[in-house]
Structures are given as structure tokens and as C-alpha cells.
Image (tube, rainbow, N blue to C red; front, top):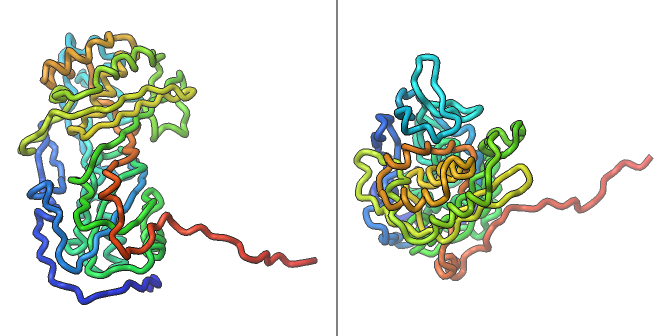
Length: 380
């Protein structure tokens, strides 16, 4: 019905286990909220592809604003008065409970995941799999869709990467590309589809990731940036923020900047940050960080501390002191996590060798460009 004509070979039984494809599990966050996760592979390096199976890579952009399920959870951001004196914007609710009020955002609430498959909640993965099932006529277990990483509710992406498998090949990818974007909601777009090598894995083959955080730094918020940048009415000092950001560069134990979840397995808190740039673009202050990997909410927690430095509530050299503490409570004394709507996953980077398509694979599809071949104006 979609006009796709894949070159099919005889499908073979697929024995991919739940751990190989990623399975739905539920974890409880430290604050008591339930978090639905896509379980990681049993072995990071195990990317073996069954015989006669074909792997495909997608680059995806999405507006994370609508993909959320917020549930009230009192006590998310409660701190003692003495520990929050440095936090500008700290306030109390009508019952006297202390919380950090982000302008135009719900405070004292905890959100669920934006990317992971959750049948009861619309997520990015849910819509991608729904479109792929419609096009390929395969079930989600056979598609084995895996993303490069999870993003929180409200977080946006320009360069999220995912891969999926099929028991048949395609001679042309532009048709499936057009069909995907035709079926997806307008907030999600597949920017690129290409054939992938058998050893490619969207998550475990990752070399680095680039995140960007946007801050609108004027007295009055631009309504067109409301869902896409954090508003700071306090005039920020970008030079102090850059000085503080430089302390993050290098190999460090980022335990102080990670939000923990119960039963989240063994964490590797040591990560390498290769750059952290603070750039003024008119009213918008752009923070861009690249690293080999990031812990849960690490970027938003680093941004939160830089905001306090930018307000000149804290000195830049507070960063190495909090890193050295290796204790999340030390950061909580002076800064709370920055809201998600200013954060973007800009790109997921891989080694060039592993991105080379297999021999004989169809050309990469960047989408179809339409042209008007003949002018059909009525002559009067």
C-alpha cells in the first residue's frame, strides 16, 4: 500500500533474545518514581548479526516537548534553608514546602523517559517502531530497534541515532525514508537512513556525544523560545561560566553530577569531557559539551552549577571542589538540576570505519527533494 518494493530473501528464524534487542524493564528512582528503561545488551561488544539479516542506521530529530508523562511527586527538590541560600529562584509553595521554581515550568514534579518504548505512554521509540511495523510488516522483536541513548522527557534531539534489522534488503532507501516520515508525527523526523555494517551498534559503537543547552538571557522571555530554551532573568556572566566549564574538561569521576536510580547496575562514573564551550548568540547563551559518555542527568546538573556561577552566586573554582567530593549531596547544597526543555542531543559520533556501508548496499537516503518539472499556469 505504501509502494515499497524491498528485495526479500527467505526470512530465517530470529533467535534474538530480549537482552540482545533490549527489553522493557522498570526501575525505581531514588525519589520513588517508576522509570521504564530499555535494558542494555548483555555484553557491550556483542553485536553479532544472524545470517541473512540486514542492519539499518537512522539519524533522528525530534521535539521532546509533547513526549512526556509527568506525575506529581512531592519532595523531589526539598532542601534545607541553609543549603539553598546560594540558589537564586529558590521559593516555597502554598504549603510552605521549598522548591526551585523554573519560570513557566512545573516544579516539584518528576518526568518519565522520552525515548524508551512504553506502550501506555507515547515515546519516540514507540512511534518509530509503530511506523517500522507498518512498513516492514515485522513485529518489534524482529525489528530489534536500539537507540544510542535515552533522553529525558522534554529533551530535544537533532542527531539521535538508532538501528534496526530486517530479514530482507532494500534496493533503494528513499521510499522507506519517505514512508517513515509520512507515518511519524510532525514532531519526529528521520533525517537519514543508511545500511549499516553487521558490527555496528547504535549504543556500544559510540565514540562520543555532543549535547547543547540553550539559555535565553533577557528580562522578558521570548515566547517563541519558551519550550526550547531555559529563561534566566538574572544577567549571566559568560566569561565566568566558561572559566568554570573548563574545569570539566578532562577525565574525571562525575559521581557528584549523576542522579542515581535504584538497581541501576554497576555505574562507570569516570568519563572524559573533550570540550565545554560557552557561546553568546545575542540573547541566547549556548552551552555545548562533548564527551565519551554521560551519566544520568549529568549534563543538566553541570549546567545547573554553571548557571549559579553565571549569576555570580558561586566562584568558578567551585567546580573542581564538587568533582573531588564525588558526592551528589555536595552539588545539591548549591544547585538543582536544570530543566530539560533547554537541552538538545546534537550528535552521536562514531569511528569513520564503522560507518562505512557494506559492499553492494543502497545509497544513503537524506530524503527526497521535489522539483517542478513543468510550469502549468493557465494562460489568459
